[in-house]
Structure formats: structure tokens, C-alpha cells
Amino acid sequence: MLKIRRFFRRVLVSGAALAGTLALANRSIEEHASDKNILDPADGHFYDWTHARVFYRKEGSGETPLLLLHTPSVFSSGHEFSSVIRALTGKYTVYCLDLPGCGRSQKPALTYTNYFFSSLICAFTRDAIGERAVVAASGLSGSFAIMAQASHPELFSKIYMINPPSDTQTARVSVRRSDMLMAMMSVPVIGRSVYYVITSRPSILRVLEKKYFNDPGRIRTRTADAAYEASHLGEGAGRYFMGSLNAGYMNWDIKRALSKLTVPVVILYSSRVNNAQAAAKSLRRYNEKISIKPIGLCGLLPQLEQPEAFISELLGE
Image (cartoon, rainbow, N blue to C red):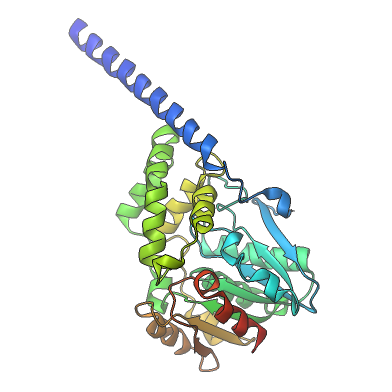
């Protein structure tokens, strides 16, 4: 019995030492992640929503409000549109959000869902913009915008979907292994450590090169630095967003909403992204009024890789 007690004592001491070491390492990473201060909250405003404090930038004084929604990723933020905002301000008053769980916005420890974000879009448009807005949404955020329009059609005048996933991808539900990852991410010290391994600088650069850009040579150092900073703001709380995303909780079947659209929808797809055109066509099957347009030789983020093409589409040139 004495030997068993000694064994468990050693395990507890070793575990405490490991937890202490990880906690110190986590703190060091957090302190240096924002050294360049690219995502300075002083550059914008905060909208106090019911469930989170949401950062946004407001630029320009054009007649038409434009709401920009970045790709749902802990690497992303409103900085994703940094290369296009100024050029759009002649026609639009631009509102660019950091989604809750991302960038400079609050990152509450909760399960992030499609309904959560569609509710935010409606509330922000009603309270902060105050009139019908055009929405340009990247990736899965396009489904958030579609569901927001379905619930409050009076708030929106047009929707651009940038490289949205297909109808089957959007409707895909969670899987057990992803749920296990989400549970692990919720463990305070260990979850934060795992999250920081996944969001290391080399990991982020690999994701940008393999997934988001067609030409890695067009990835600016500032883009990679902003992605690294975005994922580390909030003391690792972005892991709750990552867990929800990987578990599929942000997915939703938008077929019915697509079939009942009351505003114009334009899908912009990158010809260098595998199956991007097929994904766009899979969504148009539910509403033939949806327009589909290619947007240059780029990856998932034309707003960063081919900003001129993106600007041209939104200005109607």
C-alpha cells in the first residue's frame, strides 16, 4: 500500500512539474506573438453583441454599406481584406469584422455554430450598419450570410460568396474524432499547448502555401505575421473556435435557404482551386438565379492573392 501511495505521489509531482513547464512555455509564446502589433485594436471599433465583443473596422463614406466577412479560421481576421478595403471605399462604406473566436474579437469558451454567426451578422447589420448592406463572405462564411438572409431578408441587398464549400461539405456534421479533438482543446494547459503547436509559424505558413495561395511567392511576410498574431490573441482561446470548426459545428444544410433567396447572389470561384467551380455549381442547383464567375489564377483568398480582380468584381468593372 505504501508503494502505491509513493507511486501516485511521484505521478502527481511529475504531472504538476509538466503542467508548470507547459504553462510557462505557453506564456512565453503569448508574450511574443504580438510583437509586431499588426492587429492593433486601436485601428477600429468594438460592437458589444450579446455573446461576444466584436472588433470591426469602418472605412469610407460610399452610398452602399459593404460588410466583409473573412474565412472562418483561427489564422484569419479582417486583415484578410487589408489589400482591398481602400479601393472599395469610393463606392462603399466598408465594415470589416473579426468574427468572434478570431483575431481581435472576444473568444469565449463556447461551441461556435452556423446559427451563432448568422445571428451575429443580422444583429451587427441592424445595430451597427443600420441599413441594407451588401455582404462579401469568404469560404464557409458564405453559408453564414445565406442563413442570415434567410432569417432577415430585409437587412441585405446582395451577397458575394468567395470560394464557398459545396452543398455536401456545408451540410457535413461532426465526426467522433473531431469531437475528441474539441474535448482535448478544452483542457486548460494541455489544450492550449496543443493549440500552439498547431498554430506555430511553420504550421501557418504550410497552410497558407498549400491551401490558401496558388503562388506561394505572393505570400507577404506581413500576411503570415498577421495570421500568427491572430491565432495567438486571447491567451489561446482560439482553440474553442478551432475545435468547433474541425468538429463541423459551423456547418449547416443551406439548400432550403438557397432555394428561397430574395436577393442577388454572386459566387466568385478561383480557377486554381480544385473543385471550386464544381462547388459553385452544386449551390446553384438550388437556385438558377445565382451567378457564378471565375476570379483569376489564385487560391482560396483572391482578396489577398489577386486583390485587383477582387476589387474589379465588387466595383462592377
